[in-house]
Length: 180
View 1: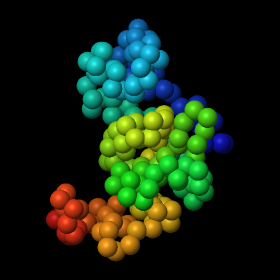
View 2 (view 1 turned 180 degrees about the vertical axis):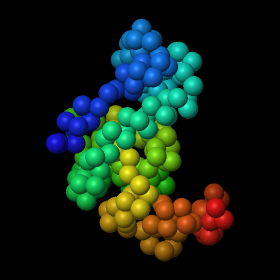
View 3 (view 1 turned 30 degrees about the horizontal axis):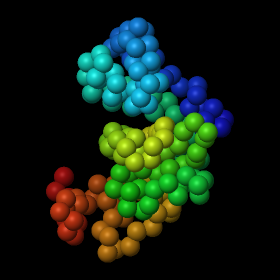
């Protein structure tokens, strides 16, 4: 199945939140109406308009993207050059974001569960397009980032960074071994 066909078959965030009893259909309709006006992400508007707890929205995102995960292994190896060109190596590694394909409606990108919220905020603020994530494990993402966005040792960012073996100094210094 084409990745975009699979994505279209997955319930939308609002549908999941209704099914989980977090929102009503009427609240979803209000959020969707507002989203059409200003283009902001559904989750951010659900928080603002309906007071939905951000952790419930993130949990619904995770459920949604796990349903998309079936396409990840095949598409990680065949990321489209046009999609890859949307971010530079630093952005891809920093936000753990691997663009995979571009559809008329959206960018499909891979990230990990633990980095999804950060990757989504980056994509929303910087890329200016709808992004649909497929969730992959950190080993798969690390291998794909190494293949598509090779980094040299001077940057301090490599597969160990993604796998969690290195803690990056927030002040930009050399990476230190993680104590986690």
